[in-house]
Length: 281
Image (cartoon, rainbow, N blue to C red; front, side):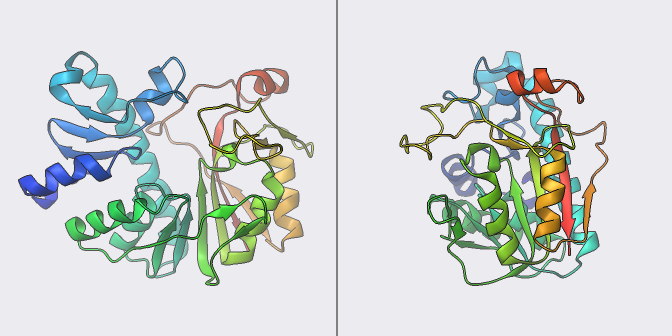
């Protein structure tokens, strides 16, 4: 999201530096945020990745930073445009919303009752800041997913529920999908790694100490949790979704480290391609 067009005051620019980080925002010509550069170029993006970039400090890497975060920004916008096209004026909940990019942008382009939830209540500050800047009314609800109960702490149901780059950190992907299905009326939008096989399998990497505070079994399994395309389809079918649609990747999107689809042995060792998929009732 490019915030330059909204004429930020010096106080708002300073505020942006305290509440925005992980998701791709352009604040000024000399200041941007986003994780994409770290995904592509960090030795291990799970360990203290740089997220906030001020040009004087990052001049030598500025073009790489701008290109990587720009691709992530275009991809997110395409995702939200596709959701809004299918469900104009519908409601949206982004599970693990972080800075609130999805609910705020969805609200900007006409969806109603857009909300984000996350484990950290401080993300409410980012959404509040963005609402003030761009004139939206997205909400933050402190209703994180609880792996121990397999539930989202919200009683409200939404037309579309978004789960982007979060299943990879959860120990039981099927319980998580069930939680998403329980709070959506129409569709689940998922973006993340998915094993390229129709076999009904899931995969994990060993627990990583930097990705969560919970290190007790089985909740310690927090790294690169994936399901296969076949397992996702079958899970969606069992929950009553009639169709599973994979979005065709665009050349403008961000493509992160991984292997080519079809090499399951390498996928299990290295990682899988990210996919964008809608399960619709």
